[in-house]
Length: 471
Image (cartoon, rainbow, N blue to C red; front, top):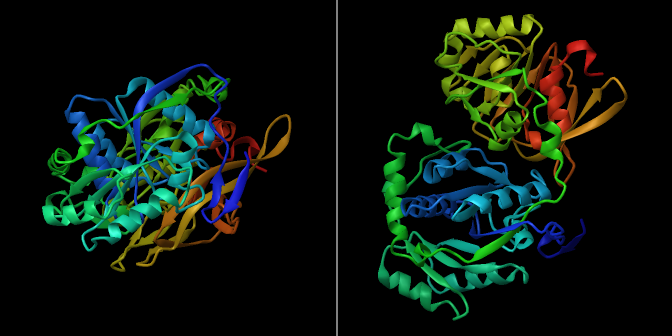
């Protein structure tokens, strides 16, 4: 893949593989903005719910590694929401996801990340790479003629960017809307406005929006948000985009049925819910039997061969987690029986000796990894990362790399030497430690399983420390 450097930083210049004649067309749109907090998630969710209410099948994607926005978008669309990221997922991974979505959808919506040109790769990189038109969402509540200047900048900073037009967010009056529209040259499409509406405001906490399952009136909010779309030009479907299949994509053929007979236990509840949809799809593709349980509500751990504890908000439920002693006892027995645990971020905190919440209250946790963690108001770490996990196979020894992301407000003091350490992308500065303790593999890093199928298979097939799998 060739890359160039210019004022828009690193721009992906290669194009999707088109040697395969299989293609599918579907209306598609990237919803982006000048900066975070402009209302991308609300507008994307409103669009998804509006078109879903019209009887259309809407597939929504999220640029970047965010876990929480996809929960809202899934609620809006009624469909699973996968990540699209040219680095984390890979060009061919993104291409295949879009092609499969185009085969079965009436509309594809892609919510961007941060500002349109922010990140390496950025939302603009993705839009340009797949020739998907961009809808710019501009928070115009305190803006008039400058609206035209911001639009011009979004549309022209990258000359090759497919730009569809702009939507004014948080604009309450027709006169204000008129001023904004008049500021635009004729060659820019103005889609209208979305008013400020407390009824569609989504609450936030330290890792972003509150999870969809925690909002009792989420469907009402989404329907109200969708009603605002009725007064914009976004009631019409955007232009269709052609998406191509990936030729000779052997990744999924290689993993098909490889974990038949293996039962994977996944803790999934309000405390542990940060799971990539692609990770679950990957494990399902292997033929593994997946059993879900709750560390909050279940008194016993189900029977299984390996336990996967994703990230989430254990600090918000620390007392309840700590008090569920029978479940904690079962996890201890699981480890003592020689079975493996893979834990990410909040899942790792759950396995420590102690967790201190934002109020300074200390709670005993599982006590399976020696160490303590303390929540703090200040962000501790964020960013895309990759990590090398040295693996030993029967035939050869090699270094395996898996990609992922980190985002947390806690600091952990873990009393064992780390097994490995991740590197941030693209700076390659030092990132999160990975710990291997007995048959437990734990890190603050959230792993994206399809980024290294063979390594993931080894983790879930051979366990963490069985028969000296790790050197």
